[in-house]
Image (cartoon, rainbow, N blue to C red; front, side, top):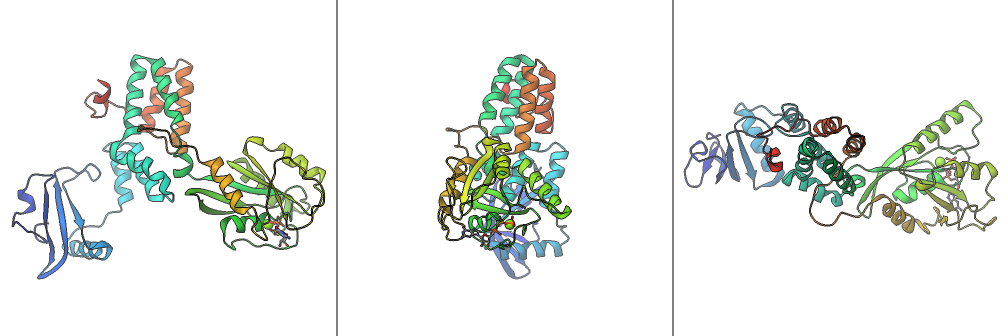
Length: 373
Ligand SMILES: Nc1nc2c(ncn2[C@@H]2O[C@H](COP(=O)(O)OP(=O)(O)OP(=O)(O)O)[C@@H](O)[C@H]2O)c(=O)[nH]1
Ligand SMILES: [Mg+2]
């Protein structure tokens, strides 16, 4: 590193104590590539080796030029994701930290940032899991209570792990038109022929800062050919795992008995009934009460529908500072641990928590120190 870095003070990076910042320049022969701040670490937590952190001033192009220079000098380029996976596998970082890094990389909602960046800076969820693990050894009831409280701090779930919203209904009611209207993009084919949509189409939409997977699907209830039956099966599959179902009726015709039957068979907690084509004269009284009236053609009611979707998906951030559960698999594991704890199986519950952390907290673990081990 000293062969490419020249500090302003003339001190070499190998001569300063670790963690001390040094200001200077990266030089490629006589050329200055960038003005930088560097910091040496005897043992980097992620890479597990001696490391030098370089803070570039000139943005992406300057950073790339420095990377190229270092590669010419014999450095090898490593995939940061591989490095994180490796660090977790070796126990240098926890699985919770690994998950936060990955979620941050895939994050499309700035509303999720406080939870993810917070976890990377302060390890609040990780610390709480260590605390709960330790608590299971001493006071199982208190540990179960803490798990219950932690499970309530899950507001970041739909923000970091986007939910699925499926548009369903009879053929030709305007599902694909509604998909395009909500997504604000001509993404799927719209046609007056019933049975146009066959495959499930998925698009990530962000509205009011809340991301969700919007899914268009084939019409239900009228499948005759084997292709239509397969398309309907795909649609039903999408409905099974959806957080919300936008069930669409057609304002211009009376709802069919089978259509209402399908609607009533769906999980009412996840349903939003919608009457589309309200720009056309109404054929009959709405088939279900409190349906949201829209016109995918004119755009009437679409903004209100978007707000309705995001309101239903996003929870309210818990007040105050504290740990936040941010991924579905964390929530699933915590629920399993809670069930085990409530069934009096403290060891099994603690094991689930340890698995989530990726390691068994041990005496001497800096985070275990927090709970007095
Ligand atoms: N007037 C009016 N026509 C609409 C509206 N929404 C959709 N349509 C028309 O209804 C027809 C069917 O629209 P699609 O969006 O393809 O309906 P779908 O439910 O996806 O149909 P399938 O994929 O075949 O099940 C097309 O001719 C659309 O232009 C609307 O709000 N108003
Ligand atoms: Mg369609």
